[in-house]
Length: 375
Image (cartoon, rainbow, N blue to C red; front, side):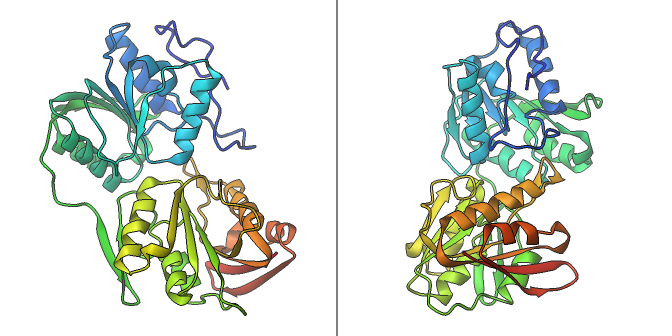
């Protein structure tokens, strides 16, 4: 899909972008109005005088990195899929200047002269990211930030004002809102991590992680009906682990089992890591930054316990849930079982019947349904 890069950039004409993981939903685009707004501003203001040490923050598919790669020193991004998408699009467009990738959980280097940021949809995550960057920079740095206007109430700009000097914001353009300011070096502030307790177990969550600061209702529905199996499982997989609540309960239920916990988000994995340590089971966790179950061996697991995400670009996308079902079937041994909780209206029954030898509904209420698939 050809991206309308600003014509002022002679290196970016006729570039194309694709989405990772591949999708059949032709309505999904690998860029949005905020990407266009940021690039237009950057090229209008800097032209061929772009700083050589720009930090690109939260680029989703390479819309920022592909045209700005020669000037980018680091991509700050917690999403595995975003990194894969950026790498693929750089390669497809013949660009060899690949910036280094860092997560916000890393002690990343931030010797930067310009910050170009896609604003995340969660306010707590926006604040966390600004605070982490401010902790790591060693001088005042111009920050240009943009995001979908409909997802940015006034509280976002108030947060931006807290971390910047001379902040300003634009009129809405391309359905996006644009912020500008000077981000100042800052001392480490009070932690934005949130703790919660469920069933006398303590959990830690980072901003931006699903159900930040509490146990989500879908997982609680599954936990209240926790799987009963005929034989203790040896290998259990928790894909899309979030804070790790399902995998940790599995580890405590079956003390000899090994848990593979995966997530697209580095912040989710760090939440799982901290929570597993708090509950004394970290030594039995194999925590992997990947897309669903990429890299997990086929026919290797006895049990998959899952509360899969079903949104993409802020929209319900059944294809995403289907991928979790298919990948779970792939990694399970013959006779292995999937326990999956989902909103009733998603209607996963047909896909489960296609992917598993047997599908059973173990429980339901007005909102959720708990499925068991046997391979």
